[in-house]
Image 1 (cartoon, protein in one colour):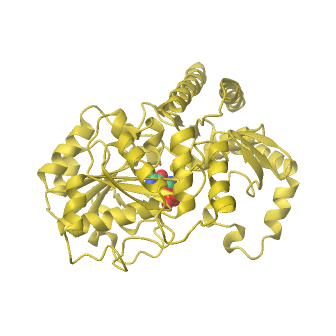
Image 2 (cartoon, helix red, strand yellow; image 1 turned 90 degrees about the vertical axis):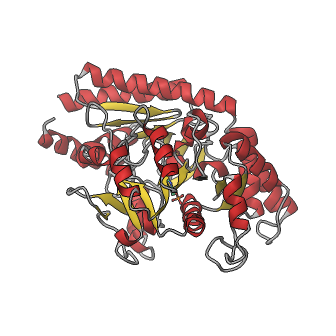
Image 3 (cartoon, protein in one colour; image 1 turned 45 degrees about the horizontal axis):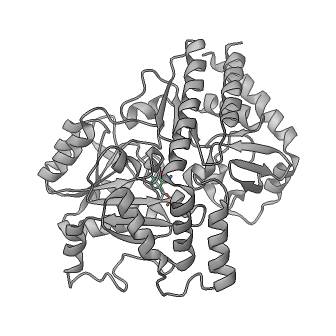
Length: 449
Ligand code: PMP
């Protein structure tokens, strides 16, 4: 594709976005007391000159402060996979916070056992503990894995993302050796002291790293979802399980995004058998929530260890983790919103979305690919689809991505700012998907000239 043409089209969309959103532009201009002008620095990841400001959101729809409505396929990068403010969650939150009171009282509620049992039904692991973010679920899972194995290191896949977890900011460098992820902010030490990296879909590379005998756990997504979707090749996940067992390394499945694969994530859909499972974002229906599940054997071994302070300041836990409000929201989400039936509908819509994108790509003969993981679809500027994180990172094209995001946003469709990712929620409709398909085809026509 002609890069000067992409840049010209992108400039036109930036100008259109600026003209279309004067209130968002002014709000951003006035934000003098925020670090980077935004509530969180990643909100500066925008295709346009400023972020769109949220007015309201319900189900699969978002309204901005300039009065525009959007079909939302971003869904808070999975935080709102249950749809925005689903009624059962709103009622549960209202009941807990306003009617009964007691969002955070340092006392358990009976909802927690219900949620634990439901997570067991879905994911198989029998013992659960809660956090408020997926990052913390991963942090605490890592600590438990190190404690129980008495090994210092964690292995992650190159260009995976597991939150702002120190140990996970590592990639496989051009020389094949593990090295700090580019841009790693304020690492506490050289990350190769705490971590190793392998490429997704590379069992030989994984075995080489595990052979050092110092890896407490492999922390992985069963499919990469933060560098496009990179799906596992046949035999890869079975191989990971076999190698981790052989080398005495625990396996942690991070299902925070791969939950899109179905009601029990990839773990249930593909019959996986991790020692620990972590999850966050979607399970709270918009209220901060996270969880980690442990195998029976691991839970027993940990609870038997009198030397580990699991109760006070030993490094696992947070004051508000497992609070009554968060747990009530998880229960409502799992019981009434992200149900087995909802997943069946969401996955069918995602297939429709994938078909639409594939037809667009084929009709222009583009060297792009589209991958789907249940209710999540993503296209990538490479064909065939990349098979490792490093390959996928190499086919990024910032201008092209920004153009497509802005093209969509200027016409009422939101995509996830960090990817070309679209997620379905229980309120998404076939018409919403078809709107995207039509706009995507028009964008390709504009690019083709
Ligand atoms: N794990 C995965 C797979 C994620 O994609 C993310 C965030 N995108 C996280 C963990 C961290 O989630 P949070 O930022 O909500 O802690």
